[in-house]
Amino acid sequence: MTIAAGFLCKDGIVICADSEVSTELEKYEESKIFTLHPHNSSLNPTVIFAGSGWLDFVKMTVDKIKHRALGVSHGYEIEEIVEQTIMEVHRKHIRYYPAEPKPFFNLLVGIRDGDNLNLLLTAGTAVTRAPQYACIGIGDTLANYLSRGLMPQQESSETAALLAVQILDQVKKNVPGCGGMFSEVAILPKQGMISRISPATLLVEYRARDFGRLFETAVDLILQSEYF
Image 1 (cartoon, rainbow, N blue to C red):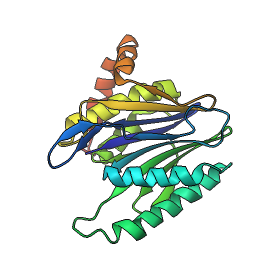
Image 2 (image 1 turned 60 degrees about the vertical axis):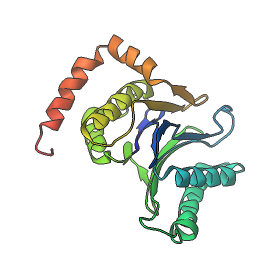
Image 3 (image 1 turned 60 degrees about the horizontal axis):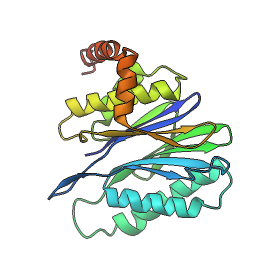
Image 4 (image 1 turned 90 degrees about the horizontal axis):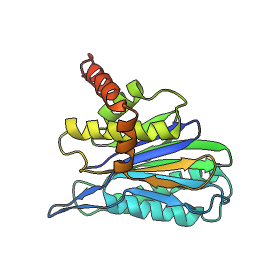
């Protein structure tokens, strides 16, 4: 089961997701992060996606959004396309799915339009703007709670990426059936191209900065609070 998190930072957007896909017969690794215009920073808007739920429906929805968004020139057009596509998939595909339970999925959508950054969250057919962070998938309650307690406002994307991997790791440890061994991170900066960073690289940087001890202490205090 997927866990994904998105963070709106002062210099970009960070999206992190696990990469384990589970079926009735097998488990395997596959990316759950998708991009629009990842290699050409001059094209606007640039978009990054992550999805939870039924992966086939996530990929179909993202493909439709990307196809319809190729010719747009403003971020608000992307938002409209996301909402229209979500409604279409529910109306034409999920509604008529011939078995129970019905498919479900949610998306995180990071949009860069010039110097403007927005993070969208879909839940069912609802599409909203996230003010600072958003988490989707199994364990999203814990992920949101840790993000609220650990992620300072207006943090840099570099620091947010370090913390994001650790937040997802804590969710995997504490929520049965959540995610796999690996997480993947993508950063959409205010300037430049989308970059993908391996968790191993982030962990080396994380340990070098001695974040580990401080992070574990903070997580222990949060998990011991009355909320949990």
